[in-house]
Length: 271
Image 1 (tube, one colour):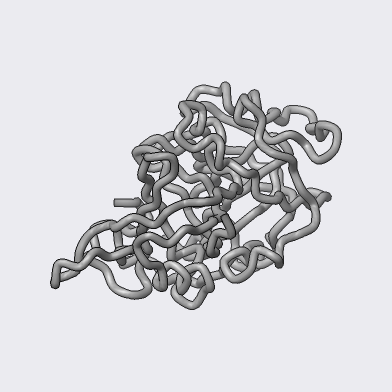
Image 2 (spheres, helix red, strand yellow):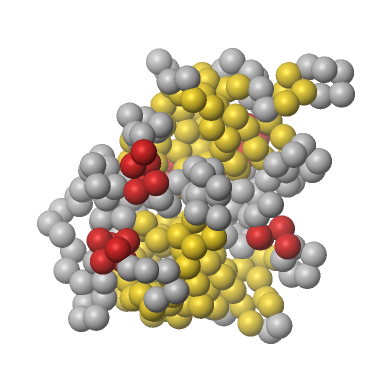
């Protein structure tokens, strides 16, 4: 069970949804090329120079867990802002030209959260942590810097099933030609295409889980309700799925005991 659920009973949430939840066409015009073999994205321009003391993505990836890291990165999506013991916090999906960083429970005021628009450049100082296979930056502080970058989805269709898929962790990605598989059965014994909550015990408004297959392997994808709630296009699209549908998706390559992407867009495949 994801650790966010442990917070919800105690926290007052103010949701702010990422624009990709409603339409991928609303994203910015800046782009990256397809992912490279070492798990980074090829820069849309020459490699971005880092400030003094700031790690490259390769240096961050090589760093041990529980060590301090300093990165410059760009907001790609925002989860809900909330207060804990009087301190504002939020979680961010971020990316630079070479890789992605998941920033968990970073303190910020509500006003700061509103300032952190998609594409905003920030310098983050925190600790590289690992939770159930997911690498993230925790206990972080940030500074807003000059610069804007919004990544296009990196096509990972050919990489799914490869051992190096984890090297693309947290990146904004796309996969095409997925077949929707049954995730379970209803009370009448009929196959169902999605669950509310991971075990089907939830209700509308909770996270959505659904299974898809590609090249003979089945994966579980998630619509994270803190990121894309029940009013968003992607949430409604998953609720409308049928077993056997062929779909294309976009989202963030989150990891939980294996690949467990957070999906922000679902559409019918043209293939």
